Amino acid sequence: MATPKKVTVLDYGSGNIRSAVRALEHVGADVTLSRRAEDVLEAEGLLVPGVGAFAAVMKALKDVGALQWIGRRVAGNRPVLGICVGHQVMFEEGVEHGIRTPGLGEWPGSVELLPAPIVPHMGWNTVEPPENTRLFKGIENERFYFVHSYAVQKWQFDVTQPRMQPPAVTWAEHGARFVAGVENGPLSAVQFHPEKSGDAGAQLLKNWLGTL
Amino acid sequence: MTVAIRVIPCLDVDAGRVVKGINFEGLRDAGDPVELAKRYNAAGADEITFLDVTASSGNRETTFDVVARTAEEVFIPLTVGGGVRAAADVDRLLRAGADKASINTAAVARPEVINEITERFGSQVLVLSLDARRTTDPGCPSGFEVTTHGGRTGTGTDAVAWAREAAERGVGEILLNSIDADGTKEGFDLEMIRAVRAAVKVPLIASGGAGKPEDFPPAIAAGADAVLAASIFHFGPVDMIARVKRAIKEAGFPVR
Image (cartoon, rainbow over all chains, first blue to last red; front, side, top):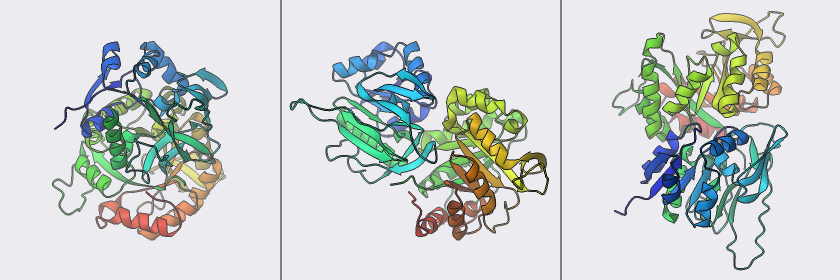
């Protein structure tokens, strides 16, 4: 058997992280739950969970000194996977109740309220992964579990340099089309909860481990 | 391309054991909530709900243990209700591995607790469990009244107005249980579902009255985003969740 991949789940006081740890262990990862810089920076993969409000998550990340860690990992070509609000904070800003909160700014774009008749968007929805996806390989037609009211509805990352690998963007729809997943070099993020998406979610995490 | 209608089995748990005996073939321990949650997960349940009916608070520790053991093995959303009175109770459930908590009597007694919980953990963690019954009380213009204590106590509060207030205060979802229909197996109270649906934007889970798979599509047509039931799944054939989903799909609604 191959050596288990070492993954750190960033522990900054966000909701139910135990499920993320267990789901990763379930697919064979060697998981550490930590907020120590060395664990976060040295792990083969970093998972950034997140539930609740965008502003609260950004504040919690700041409080544990984690704001620069994601950028540092990406600069060093070290894989990161953001989940739910951990996906949203990778973008430039979040707008909740009219208040703009700066995000980590790894990608351009704004996280805004979904214009849907029923909000939160809660439950199992389909996704539309692109051809060059690695995360959704073999699970392109599965449903995943979403719980959120806000989303990135415009993808504004234009790759103009022909030498750059274009990001793989997966879309979903609830009231509007929104970004359900991004795979951009070492940085990936999904709006849904793979750790709560049964077998399909387990396969996605396994696919991610395969990229480490 | 729309979100699937969720089918949610609900288990009553007392001091760590499932209360109503459940009759499934091949179950090692039919009283073990973890075994049952695994079985329902394998049968295609979209979420699992535990209702903690433990009377003595001293036995509540067993509930946290059950939640933790379930979250170790079942990777779909888990909601836990019963005994949730304050943000600290929600915190303990989330730490044990629950994804959502449902609140009932405590929110009726002190609605501010909804704001306290959702400001701290976000709207998505809190489900308002609303037990409602039909009434002619002029204080309830919708014709539906909020009840507490498992439907035994009327409150004189209008159920539709309470649903609206709870949504404004921040609950992420409403579990609407018809006390009149509950246990009848004659179908959901569709008028009640329509009335609450028209008043709130949050997802609505319908409960109470399901007796056969054909009872579910009308509840969805009336505005439910999810359906929750207990005995039809516990005492029905093992493939009842699949049968219910088939009925929903044949009526033209998406399922997983």
